Amino acid sequence: MALFRLPYSFPSTLPSFFPKILLPVPSFSISCSSKSTPNQLKNNDDNSNTDNPKKSKRLSEQSSWEAKDSEGRDYLYRLGKEADNMNIAVGARAGVIDDLFTGNFLGKDSDIVFDYRQKATRSFEYLQGDYYIAPVFLDKVACHIVKNYLAHLLNVKIPLILGVWGGKGQGKTFQTELIFQAMGIEPVIMSAGELESDRAGEPGKLIRERYRTASQVVQNQGKMSCLMINDIDAGLGRFGNTQMTVNNQIVVGTLMNLSDNPTRVSIGQDWRESDITNRVPIIVTGNDFSTIYAPLIRDGRMEKFYWQPTKEDILNIVHRMYEKDGISKDEVVSIVETFPNQALDFYGALRSRTYDRSISKWIEDIGGIEILGNKLLRRKKNEELPVYTPPQNNYRKQHTEANRTSKILHLLSANGGGFT
Figure 1 (cartoon, rainbow, N blue to C red):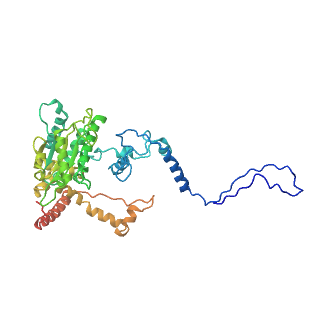
Figure 2 (figure 1 turned 135 degrees about the vertical axis):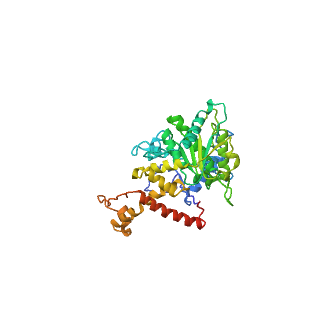
């Protein structure tokens, strides 16, 4: 750094033409140095602060707001990042976050399908028609539901779970749904596919959440509800060399705990004395309950009901199925007696297969399979499809399809298909 200093006054020996009186000139300095960088300025400020340090005040010695983990990151932020929080229902909603971020151009709630996603119950408006409900099946399911709703008045141990089991295709699920519709029940329905997950503990938590949802239907809507799990043995059963997973064990333990404590159900929150869940019945269906963990299906927890429709039940159910086609009761009796020892879905498949030929003819009418996609999905707005005329079912057609289906089942059974 170079320093230049000017004197207060000029030398005393001056030429004669300069005036004698001179004003004093203040001195000043000029320093030449390299340009200071922002980092150097910041370091200078930091050095100046070290002389007089000021310690920040903590909220509390036990507070986690300012705690750091081993890597120096915020502890609460790391917990939130690791948390399995999939709740999107509290997104941009009025009253939850600042209105500045919700906006009014999409309405107060930007999640426009929130109300529809929250409806987890099942209604049965699609079941139109006069279907037959077997009296024995109705008596068992209705009695189990009523007993659980009156459990606090009865001085007896009431099993929470009703296990409906039997052969394949015997109408267990459909008969149960018909009873729900007749009794005005809005159930929460699960399937065996939801009893396994890549995350440990998720299926058990899902069962508890669905159970609490059914309880909230009773409390908030004033409607009867229950939890139904279809084909439970497919998700929890042990078949041959199948492997038992952690989720299988947790699901079994969850159902056992619900059976023992149906009014105290936790989904991870702290226990509160006021958090009492309404007792709602559980109905499960399956084909073979002997593959399920034995303590779960004991009498104190699960009431078993073996469903095997009688010949009278089959005749009434099939007759109601074919009644709209104009097939008489005597013709239905002839079909059932010609092909005995068949499940109910066999007779339902007959009615479905009578539509095959008429559908093949309809495909030819619209131009063949080459333009089928364009006709069904990319037709113009005002373009209409050719009219489809349903076939006229009669006894002869049903008998022909029954023979054809019976032969197919016989061939599959002869080749080890497992049909009985």
